[in-house]
Length: 358
Ligand code: PEP
Ligand code: MN
Image 1 (cartoon, rainbow, N blue to C red):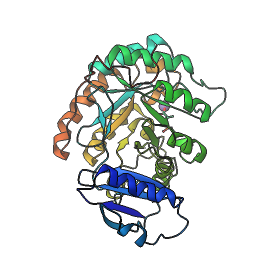
Image 2: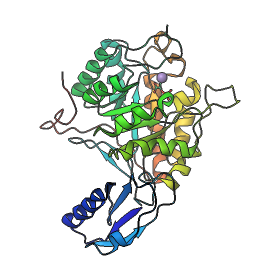
Image 3: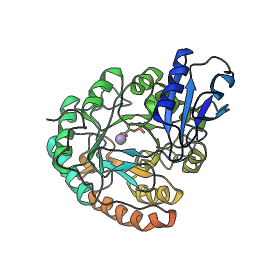
């Protein structure tokens, strides 16, 4: 159920409708749009009588949402969601492409800084790096943990780059939320509903990667889990799915981009690194991701990939990253997007909104 407020509705009228919904024992989700605010209702076991809302001041319409995902759906919010990073000009969603780059794992301060310096110089706005790694083998490198979070916070202070890193369980979620700008939930956890609900109770953007065999509906329902708890800043990320094809690690399913965009207002990025598993396939698929209309790309970059502790074979060299940026900058205007090069940070507020500092 969705209560659509009219364009002139005041904050008080919106609040009064939310209070009314909460008094009925349901949850109200006000989602402001460019034209009007819509209020999603969740927690109702069956249909609610429209008459409950029709006479309230400022209400334009009451609509039944037929899709299983409601808050993620375009029915609730017509225009694309744009996620902002206070104190900077960086955004995810909308017209500007968001580029996330960095190593699979943070291996040392030297390694992380060497890579950050080069991706920042090429114009990335977001730096990624695993602190907690979900590895197939328990004997493989599991990540540096809090030490890696500290290194990434230093990178934010030094280069201005906003930080994205993965939480693998409820315990690491708290830590990641404290230190990072965006919490990544990995493919293997896309249907970890307890983790999704916990992330939904935080007020930090969440980058949700598609499960390796998740359908479009399952992907959007996972986003809905986060949103249903009140966190509406969800970024989707296509990272390839399991198929019979064995020339690549996964099969990058680019057609999910326009499919998601038809149904949902949430931003969607593409990860051609995990999507192919092969360095020489990353640039062509990054170009294709921008051409298909993704809101940005996430790529693994390493200055010494042959020495990487994880995912070296799919990590591109910094020079290839710079080449990728030049190429997608030229493709972007064809699909009505632009590639911002570099991040501007207001020094007065830098770090204030960004979780813990050094
Ligand atoms: C990663 O981004 O390093 C990662 C582990 O990704 P995924 O969850 O898509 O496998
Ligand atoms: Mn990786």
